[in-house]
Length: 403
Image 1 (cartoon, one colour):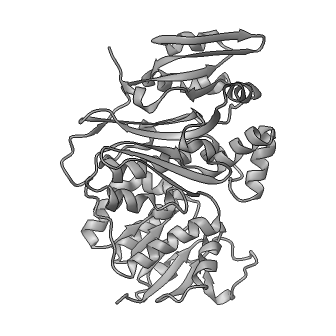
Image 2: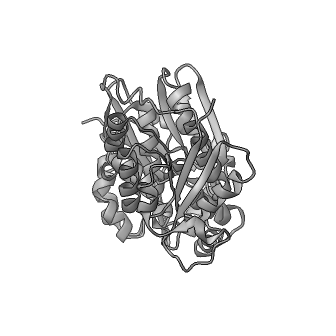
Image 3: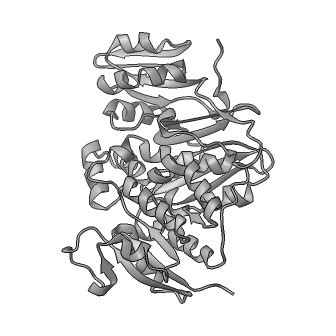
């Protein structure tokens, strides 16, 4: 029999309201005691007595046994989640940045205090990828995980490619729909996708990686030239995080725009939808598809975690707590497309091989193989010169760098 949950929810934004909308349609053994909000003057759709601005009203209430954290401030989220776990309360969170930056400590806190932190809603919205990595693939050898993890950037790329909108118009639409923040750099710069990838990799491979060690290059330098190139080649541009096991000792991770062929699952993942491709040794290739942005899709994932806590569900972190032979590395080679103006950037990247090169007026690009370490070293140069980089190869071709 399920236990009664008394819940305190931090945040009543898009996801918080979406969660509430779903909960009131269900007959579940739970009660929302209080919402903690930042702005007491903002007009709310629920009774005023349900809201407070004092976090300790929830965190110090012994009757509240479950905390749901749905705020945008990663530092404040960390303090909330840490105090809740150490106070004996179970937690559900959708804060991918906070979880990625503190995952090792959060795992230790759960073990020390016998509490549970669930965060399905933090990775790919409505797609249940964490639970599948944790349970279904617990004994599976995973060759790679890749996909579209950010609905905001995918919405923008879909609009510019499919409807011919310019980048700024598509971004404004994404912001108006609540898919992108006022400052969109986390989404379009690949940071959001990177945080989600780090969380997924911890469950897939048992490797916990610091965010600053993982390369992320986004779509903010996208130009009409890339769209012209993609349409001529019959491919699409998607922002794709990648994790690949290179051998029995190394796993690599990066986030880059990718040229996606029509034969690939991700080609037809458009607008705010997400898609995750898992390449496994025994199950072969499997594809997960669903909405990755919006209050109700993410709210449904949060509710799934809340419902699991009624039966004392916990992540076991089986691969994280196992024998740690697998290590993260950036010492890999991969094929990239580089659209550039500054010839010095091409020299600095020191291509190991060049497959194609094109000059025409203002449009210059080169396709070839580079070391990921060189991309990392030149990341600021790429940004400053407004160059555009895309992964132009196959996952099977990503390999350890040769000296």
